[in-house]
Image (cartoon, rainbow, N blue to C red):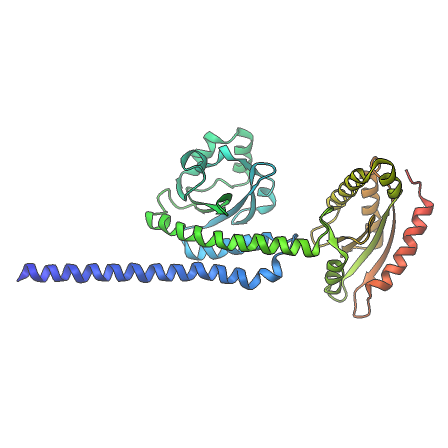
Length: 353
């Protein structure tokens, strides 16, 4: 009788364990789907060339709610052109420092373990990095406090069966903080995030094609106007129109390939001297608009002079600028007429080297 009772008790207990595990798994899956829903909800607003990193940070924030043993996280993407993996979003780290750090494929823990195919728990990642990273990179990460961790749940991400990057969930508590259950959970996360990334990549590509110039990677004039009209009232800015000198001569003499190369060099140089929140657009063949936010005319002139100096061996240009205090009455077309006249006056007064 006692044996029969114990057997029934065992079956009931086993049933409760199975039910508990299923309920827990369903709860986790709901949280993972919530990540995707959050991405779908905000994707229309944040998927643009200058702030796509926000969505990677959002994913990390949601993942840390699911894997509560983690205290820090990072999202790294594979740069096919450079054949390296780069930081695109972090939680608990200094992104300004880490965004300049990249890793060779051979430096990654997964590369020697699973050829970047499946999730892994990395015990004592600092020790691993000390062996496989070059000393300069290792010391640099130490100085950034980026290796102050004892365990990492690392999830490689694939899109269309190609390695695209990885997510690292880090803990400073213990080498054994992550369990087999967390590893099993990471496979579900991997599957769902891969679906989301495929959608993100598609929307980002569509957004870029619609709003940005393919050659120079600057905004097109339609996108510029939309962002111009969204600027808050009382914001003080300087609008600048730039026209490259002798550009037709360059095309006719050296060919369009050289002309295109000049446009790309010019655009890349300008981006080095403007901020993330400033607006930069190609509004014609060799004409560009720049809107510098929260700046006065004298400071804007210094910025233009710096750009001229950086390009002195490449190409010269004329520039017209006007200070604006935004209000409902500000019209881009009206300001454009003013800076267009100033730009042509500037071209006449400066040598066209």
